[in-house]
Image 1 (cartoon, rainbow, N blue to C red):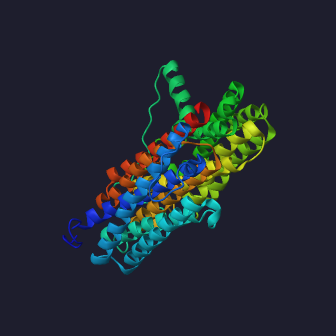
Image 2: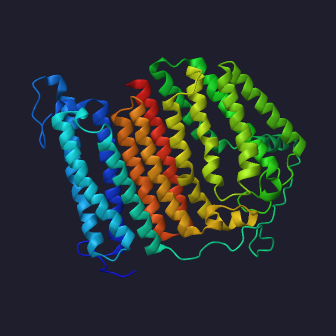
Image 3: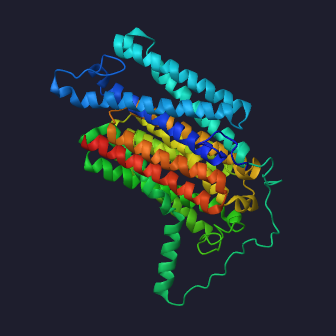
Length: 474
């Protein structure tokens, strides 16, 4: 990369990317603070502009602090937007990046004017939602500019694998390990029991159960019943186990070709296919029985989750389309609806908003794993994004979906009573996730891909915990 391709103190491409990432996060922070200001009616405590007069009523001090925080954040973020636009204008960037950032700076000035009118004349003085809409457009533009600039600075023109068909003869291809069964009956029983447990994909359970728990908490608040929790999470664990088992059965032949899956129980013939199918069927029946003790809608959604992951995703999407991860995100989003339906016996907007967050987070999360196992997926014949479109496009799409996830998180805040803890968690862990994704562009290693993958897990886990605490405790 060319040094000093930007005006000082920026200087280098990496520093410009860092400035762009900081600007994107700053705009997002302003959006989430603005949403909190609107939800808490803090704007009513500050009817002057650009400063706030101290209210007579001391009970308004908290709202005043939020309003002041919004104003101060707007000044800091405005400086970041201006610096980014100037650096892009004077630096070595593409025409569309420069144009996007200049437009974002102009729109930011317009947004400030809209905010001033709203603060002094009331929210009805101008088109409702215009202030937030402008913020979302600015945020989208800054993230798009970041993705485009990193694509040019760190990408290559053609880094896809020529054919996503199975690669049968690779010198470093995996060989299914030879498994020697222990002679002791107890040891054999333990090995077999662990194999059945492994088929249930237990590593997916904690996060998906958190999703369902967050859906329940949003629906019930602090009035959540213990039986509903136990039955919903129990049915969810069984549904995940059934889905994982059917997935093992249907992909057993392909698993033998991939190093990360070559030792799965059915790939090494440790468990007969017939037994695995019976086990999956039993888990499905037990899951539906648990959900039916709550209501029929939860049971229907549970069955839909099993069928979607086992049949639609595994058989139809994963081996046939590069958009398998995007569409397949519906499987991970369904637990949010199950949790909501378990409490309300209906599907509501907050539950759909939470499901939307999970749906949009899934590509940003899983594309990192696809990058780390690109050759393995090609060997298995799966048309994953890095295999078909290349690593450069995949890294760009990770940034796109991070932005979409953060925007959907604002929608969730607007539809619920989630407060400062949720907002702060989304900003902090969203920043960590964004930083890891930007770093992935420069490092382009397996370790960097796994770092971004773990950052995505940390983001969603922390946000779901914040939802639980905010909904149940406040």
